[in-house]
Length: 343
Image 1: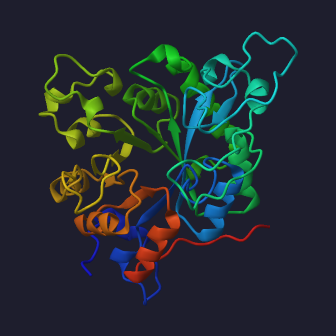
Image 2 (image 1 turned 135 degrees about the vertical axis):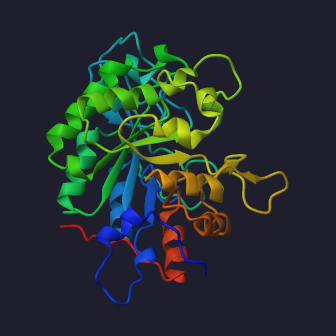
Image 3 (image 1 turned 180 degrees about the vertical axis):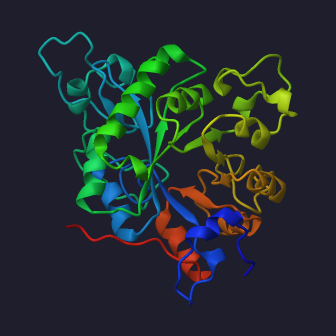
C-alpha cells in the first residue's frame, strides 16, 4: 500500500515503538456526530461507543438555546425525522409544538421534552437507536470524555452559525462566546479543536482564545468563487482574492491549523460512481502541507473512496462509520487510536 504523506511536523510526536512506521502513526479518525452510522447521532451513548471502539476524535455540532445553553445538535431547526414532541414543558406553552422551531428560539427545558431517539435515521440501517434520547449539552459530552479518562481523544466542535441566514441561529458573537465559556470551564480545553463553515466565527474564537487550533470547513459552494464580493461564510475574505483557491483563502484565517473540505461531489458519492469527482486532490493536500496545515475531509463512509483519499495523503477523515475506517486502517497496518473502557 502507498505510504501516507503527512506534514513533517507531525513526526515530532511519533511513537517510539520500532514496529510502527512514523508515516503510519498520524491518521485522525473522526466519528461524525459520534458515528451516526452506528448509533443515534450526538447521543452520549454514541460518543461512548466511539470511545470504546477507539477513535482519535469525536466530531460534534453545537447550537445555543434561547436561555444561552450550549446543546449538541446538528440541525438549527428541529427535524421531524429525528425528534418528536411529547408534551409542552408547561401547559398552554405558545411555542408548542417544538418540532420545526429553531433551537435559538427554544429553551433547554423545551428541547429536553422532545424524544430524539424515536426512530432509526432513514438511510442508516446499522444505526442503533437510543430510545427516548433527549438532546444533551456540550458540558455533558465533556463529562463523558472525562469519565472515560480519554486524554488522547480530541473533540472537534463545530459552531453551527448559519452565516447565510444569520436570523436562524444565535448571534455569532454570543454563539462563539458561549461555546468558548463551556470549553474553558471543562478543564480539557487542550483536547479541543473548533471548526466552522462560518469563518467569521473562527475569527471571533481566535480573538477569545488565540492559542486554540481552528479548522476551516467548506462545501466549496460557500467559497462563492467567481461571484462579486466576499461570501458571507468567509468572515470578510473574498476567495477570488486568492484565485478561488480554498487552501490559500483558509490559510489567511488566523489560528487555522487544519482544513476540512467536502471530499467530493456529489457529497455522498463514491469512487467509480458515474459523475462522481473528488474535490480533494493531491495538489490540494500538497499545498496545505506546504503551509503546515492538515487536510481532514468530510463526511466519507465508503471504504474504497476513503482508501483513495488516504492515497492522496489526507491526514484524517470525518466519517459516520468509524468502525469501517478503523478496519481499513488495520488492513493497511496503520496505527489505531486507543480504545477506552468505561470507568
